[in-house]
Length: 252
Image (cartoon, rainbow, N blue to C red; front, side, top):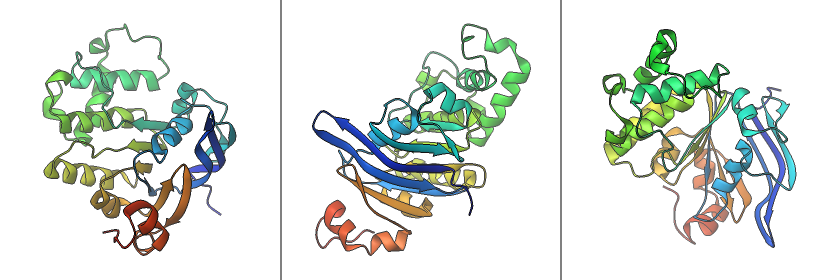
């Protein structure tokens, strides 16, 4: 059996009397794009935050490529190959596009406490950063301040920053949020091209994007996984139609 890139078993998160994560079991296979869908308030971001180490679960196990990571800090998880993009971009707006990626490369190289160093003076670091920008289609914007980028360009840059950490598993928190049709199509192409290099857990409301990208889909409702399957299996699942889309609706 191939070791899952992500293996979650019995994950529980309580906030007082609220069971935000209800004994979640979830796997992401190597090279897979696994989508996590569900209505607002289902607990998707809470689950992602536990995977990253930003929230501590009350119960359960999390493994990355067969290694337990449940007790590790966020920084340690990143060093082992976990990266995240956010629904709202998390960038340094007063730095250049290239600077943002160069800092991510610098952190990956083990210099997480040297943010004050002038990354503009490290040619090798900036050369590597430029390759990630090219992969995101932003090489022509390298010297532009992040604050001057469009929303879609900032989403592309955030993906380049995440990839600069050379993750094994990429957690994508609504990468299509706020994008127009053309920008969404470009993001879909980028993610599809990345599939051979990195496994992905995709949290997304844009069902066209989910069905274009996902190998498997898990449906989260009130903190509980109610179904996991291929796109066709999820489309045809009556419990999904009832709980997520409303009785009688089709997942299309």
